[in-house]
Amino acid sequence: MIEAVGLTKRYGAKTAVYNLSFQVRPGAVTGFLGPNGSGKSTTMRMILGLDRPTAGRVTIGGHDFRNLPNAPRQVGALLDAKAVHGGRSARNHLLSLAQLAGIPEARVDEVLGVVGLQGVARKRSKGFSLGMGQRLGIAAALLGDPQVLLFDEPVNGLDPEGILWVRNLMKMLASEGRTVFVSSHLMSEMALTADHLIVIGRGQLMADMSITDFISANSADFARVRVPDETPEQREKLTTTLTEAGGQVMPEPDGALRVTGLALPRISDLAHESDVRLWELSPHQASLEEAYMRMTQGAVDYRSTADQKAHLQQQPPPYAGYGQQPGYAPPPQQPVADVPQQGWYAPPPPGQNPYAAAQAPAAPAQAPAPAQAPTDAPAAAPVAAAPAPAAPAEAPADLTKRDTSEDPR
Ligand SMILES: Nc1ncnc2c1ncn2[C@@H]1O[C@H](COP(=O)(O)OP(=O)(O)OP(=O)(O)O)[C@@H](O)[C@H]1O
Image 1 (spheres, rainbow, N blue to C red):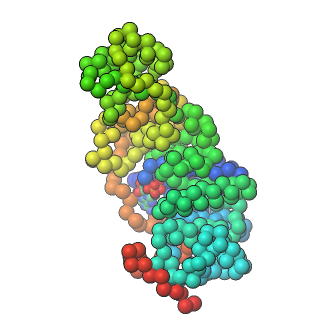
Image 2: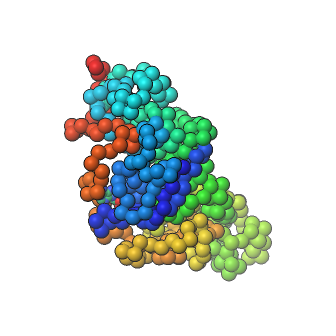
Image 3: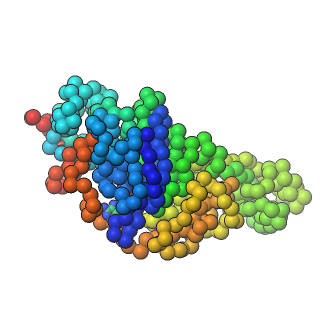
């Protein structure tokens, strides 16, 4: 089991992770979700002893990673699939990791088979596609046959078949009783893969619950109502009637109305009483993706100026819930800002976005972090935490010109 208690990480004035407490249990796939820059990788690095917490603690099986006996056999991780010596073949890359960790050579061929790279085992990895690189990173994580596995965005760059493969692999590893912690941006993928979810925004815990609870707490029902296209005045009339009856009415991009707070028969009756003809009255459920986006949109640091959703905001009614943790509060050093709320793509949820209740912290004053090493980073990364040796200083491979030459070693 992985356990974080009050985990906090600051890089200078930037709070990357704030007071995070959670447990990742064995026998389940736990999805770790959050927008860009929300602190997922920082948290994973702290779990693996690659970053030292500013405050709090994180343990694996009750031990700090650095004190874990025989760490490479207990913990495997894929943090950065590109962190591979491109001049080495896939097999030699894995072999060097195996030798450092005292893992027999036969296991190298075994994991190459598991990830489907046997056919290119002797090719230099710098010619690998993104997906092949991901598979190699996953092979490295599996090398020590560990009980605890961390994957930072393992489906990045994979094609649909690869995504399905990763999904099934994660599930299989969990069904063997292992602890599987997977970060992703893709709520839709996590909905299919994970049993449990930990959602963070701006470094803080926003949800820690089973996927089933997340779905029932966050997928709001709504009705789609449509009047004949050539009667905009009827649409206006119906909007007024439904709103006066206590419904919340939102325009959809295609001209339909999205109605919450009123049952379908009631909408039908109200339309009939107002003499408004309907072309459509249908029940819908907001997707989990929408619920996730709604939950985290107040915690999004980087948003395109062309993102029309940012302009379609509407203050929702105050409410509490939405799976946020008790005691949630924005980091004290971050200023208050207006919180982007209702977009046309997100219906009013049954609970409340914690950022709405607490008034979310604004986008950070500082620019996104430069790719610099933290001052308190350990001098040398433990072998199991670093799924691959440091990348060479050379420029990344041009994937359009794939070098599939063989590594003679
Ligand atoms: N070494 C560092 N020095 C300074 N700031 C950092 C460092 N590492 C991360 N940060 C900052 O901490 C915050 C969290 O970053 P992190 O990479 O953990 O987020 P993330 O959720 O993994 O993002 P993404 O989904 O984009 O990979 C970001 O604002 C980032 O800029």
